[in-house]
Image (cartoon, rainbow, N blue to C red):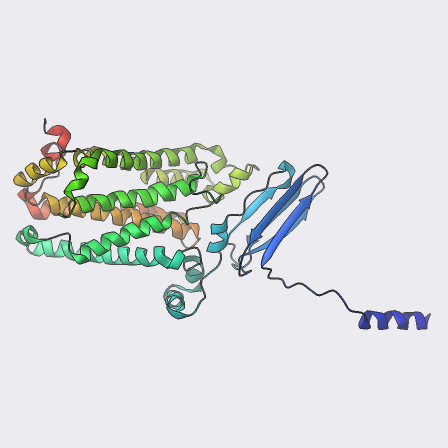
Length: 410
């Protein structure tokens, strides 16, 4: 008996064992086999640090979940599949990329280290990621918000100190143009990252993605276009295309409002439904009715006021809008400065609001902070217009019947 045991022990020590696969895999493939259905979910992460897969085999159903393997606080990507429905939920590539912080060397690494030093390692992991191609969105957003608010503050101070000097200002200089271009780049570069439930460029059923696309990128671009229109460098050859621009911006404003209303009216956004689409609204669930009301207020403040922009845009989008504008300037010579500030401040407000929404989505701020930032963004253009009216006095007007095209009787 002892000889048999000795032989067994020696065999276990001598015979080769199968190699142990590393925990971090370059390609993770999970399949769940059932009697009539086969559910397969495949996620590819080139660096192997974005996702880990786990399978829960139950008596009646198999569940496949992808969870963030790099973030300990659960702020990374997640994709789930209900095996009982024989449908595989697509692994969103952008979610996997957002879970991968950029830890490379060189200039990118130096900037990332600066973010970690200033705001903490968590902020670096959440904001300085592989999802942002060449970090175009982060860099352009920082330039637009920091440079834009600085320019707006200095502009207001100079106007208050010497109102007469405003008549000599130009709004198409290199600094003003670069800031507006930065805002436009920031808006456009956000669109590829606005994917939360699928890899489609535009998924009508993904309300959150549409909110970032219409409410973030679309409205910021619209406001940059308004500022460009009043900068003094808007090309005359674009004037005949005014109706096309009006149709475009109408789609953006109406689309934003409709999108948020559809999301808020969907009971699955606030209920623990087991349907796959209900998990897309997990960030909007609330533990009490008061929090639900705050979420509803948050998104309605970000959508319904935008419809009033169309009344103002009507004047700018007529084929003969330049002739209308010449008449307005003849009566109110500094009206261009007021309206340029309005468009500029609106773009800053929209960009800041969506940056705040991004911070909340990455779990860096809470709902209340997001609501306060949104309120600031909503009222910023109004405050700028009121300030210019108080400083520039009779050289401007804020009363729509005085200058809006629909009240001029043309």
